[in-house]
Amino acid sequence: MDKRIMRGLEAHGLTAFQIRVLDATTQIPKGETRTYKQIAAMVGRPRAYRAVGTALRLNPFPVTIPCHRVVRSDGLGNYSGDGGRRRKMELLKMEGADIDGLR
DNA sequence: CAACACAAAGTAG
DNA sequence: CTACTTTGTGTTG
Image 1 (tube, rainbow, N blue to C red):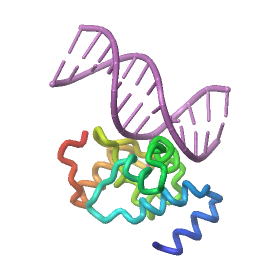
Image 2 (image 1 turned 90 degrees about the vertical axis):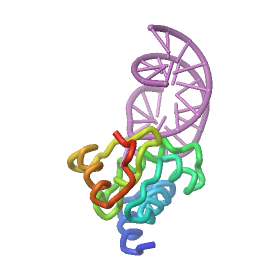
Image 3 (image 1 turned 30 degrees about the horizontal axis):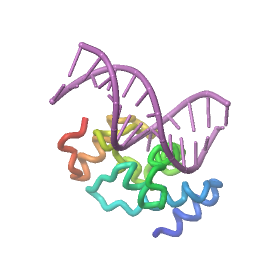
Image 4 (image 1 turned 135 degrees about the vertical axis):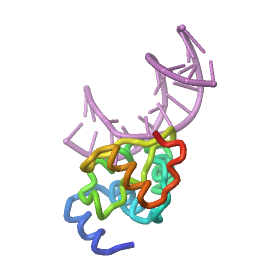
C-alpha cells in the first residue's frame, strides 16, 4: 500500500473502517471495477456496503483514490467527484473497464 | 437520532 | 418480465 496515502488519511482523522475501505479502493487494479459489496467484504464487514458508500463519499482524495472504480451491483453507482456519474463513466471507459451493462 | 455513493427480497403491473 | 417499495445493515453527521 502507498504510505503517502496512508499518512494523508490519518491526517484527515478518518475512522478505522474508512481507512480500510479507502485502502482497499486504492488496491483496485486499473481497468477493474468492484462493487460496494465486494469492498465491504474485503474490509471485514460484508454487510456494511452501505457504510462503504458513505465512507467513499467522504473520500479526501478523489483522484489519488480511484473511487470511480467502485460501482454498484446493478449498474453504475454515484460519484461525489467533479462531473458526477458522467465523469465516472468516462474514467472507467478510458481505463478500459468492462462497462458493458453499466448505465 | 436521521440520513446514506447499497443490496436483496417482496409487491404490483 | 420490468418497476416500485420495503427491510436489513454499519458508519457518519
